[in-house]
Amino acid sequence: MHGDVHAQFAGVTRVYPGAGGHAPVHALGPINVDLHKGEFFAVVGPSGCGKSTFLEVLAGLQQPTVGTVTFEGRAVAGEVPDGVGVVFQEDASFPWLTVWGNAAFGLQRQGTAPAEVRRRVDDALAFMGLKDFAKAYPSQLSGGMRQRVCIARTLVLQPRLILLDEPFGALDAQTRLLMGDEVLKLWRTTGATVLLITHALDEAAMLADRVGAMSARPGRFIEIIETHWPRDRDSTIVAEPTFGEITGRLWERLRGESLKALGHSGQPPAAALAAE
Image (cartoon, rainbow, N blue to C red; front, side, top):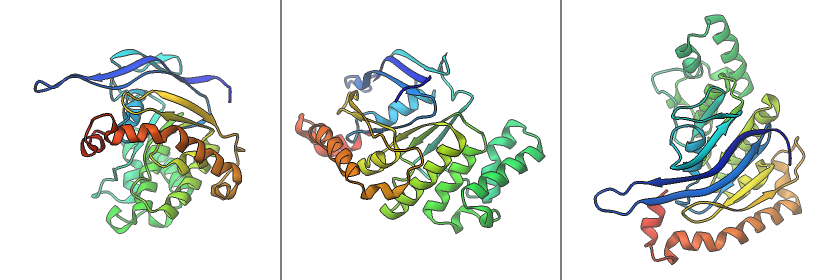
């Protein structure tokens, strides 16, 4: 897949300084990769490999130790760039606000005119299937619906790059597939570039135009696989023979890296799992 470069990693590494006499931890890199405007790019890899660090560096939430990250040609430096929206795995809804209030929060904090807030929030809630729950509170919703609220809160900001950090990790397999359909619809409708971090190979294979398979720590891309799916795809493609071929190829590349992460490089499994 080719197109305009929307975001770029150039020689990026991330090293966490050692604390309490421990050695520094080389978490990520070197990474050299371009994200193309309007594509859906997924990252998979073993636990603790630096997937979330990769996303956080792009989001401006962490600084590269070496190298540069750019978004729309400008260096990402110390804060979430304008035009970037982030959705995390954790339920980040505010329990004291209604669904409508949650979705409106970011716009209101920006000082957006009330009429524009109403228009964007009403549109986002309708798009995410939450219109009938506008007055409900998060505690009254299922986990999947709370994640829809978090996506709606990002959607109203009209981001050009959407970063999803394992947003469906806490959901059951069937709900994850349906939420995947919602994200594909969102991607097609907005035309945004989407980066998805996930531990689920099937999720990556279904959703993405390209899947980056990451090594055990320090995370680097060992292969980037193009899926060649049509843009109007949905979860029915899991029945396609090609879907099984893609997931099989991903597992073939990642099996050895996952064994390393589980302690076959000398690290106890519990420590490896706790490192992510």
